[in-house]
Length: 505
Image (tube, rainbow, N blue to C red):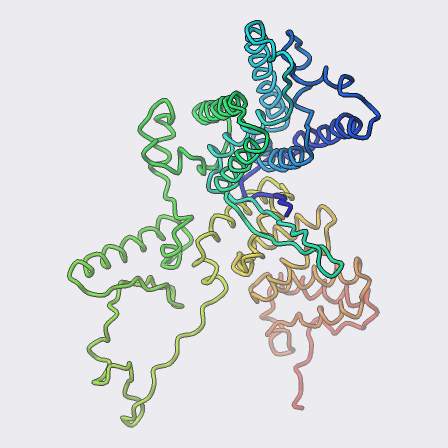
């Protein structure tokens, strides 16, 4: 089974160029050293000078040893997890600072280990024959920093099951893991490696030291506000840490105290009467207070979701109401005194379903932020996450239109069809403009004029008749003009600006 993490929902602002370059250099170094030794093209003495040895002080080895690996399993595991945590860390601080931290860690740990064990070799000569290789120390630093900066964010992962059966090699499983879970898994794998490689206590000690270096660096950069974790770091998410001045400044503590965080509160969003967080939270707290009061009296309570009229739900008892009838089945008196069933409540809208999901508001916020900074890679990641959860229809039309415009600006016209189609399905004021954009893509990109004509014929306004010409607004007239121009490009005679009403069939 192969395990491959390929993306994350943590807010990142830089492409993982340095991380990818380091991974590629490690693969090249493995091919040029270990594989060459295994195939007999080189001897062990030809490449031993690149590893960290303890028969003297060799500053060059402090950096070269981090590119060498002995086993393919060691290389694969290290590179996968270097990519995972490097994607988060470099995405927040950039490639230059990431590279400085990564290589400075290896130089410090390599120099310390070589000096200590070289001194020890005078008392124990066998130590001088030992060597050390691997990128473990730098990875432990990045893992610790990711745990501090984005413990609750998730990593998109793929498990490849390589099980030979009927001439095939199994399949793949897509899943998501929290960064905290991923780090724990890496520690477990390291313990397994220690078991097979021997009880290398000194190596475990250096890994622990690298972990502490990463924790200290992460806390210092958070305290100095050199990194923007959008209040998803371990300090912001744990109120008991706000009281320590050396971890959280007074200004940040006040900002966190004033901030109303409803990103993980699905109930409050379902009770929202407006789009503001304060109103949403007030509605939730009011319902929650009533619920707690009734619960104290021993009554069964629940918090009702928002109804279609936009009124906030209130705490209601689970028992039948007094006017429900003797049978308690919720029947009512209808016309002429006949009993009838109460009308069934209308199904929830896609927006209501999305807002009830605990992750929708957080991911939608990250999508809007990536659109405001015009970061297409992040926007695609967050939109894909919402699609995977089935929550993309709950996005606002403006957010969908901004995402489609960003895709079009990068000439990704076909992916732009998805958000445009969602706007059309909403049937809001922007649906006609979305249909125009879809028709343009069908005509000029896909070369399907017939499909473009079908799309354009869906654009009709209620006032687009001879009797309602004066009720057409200027935006509607512009839409009709653009529609007719595209119809002409498709080779179809467009209708007049004011179409005749359809006669009886």
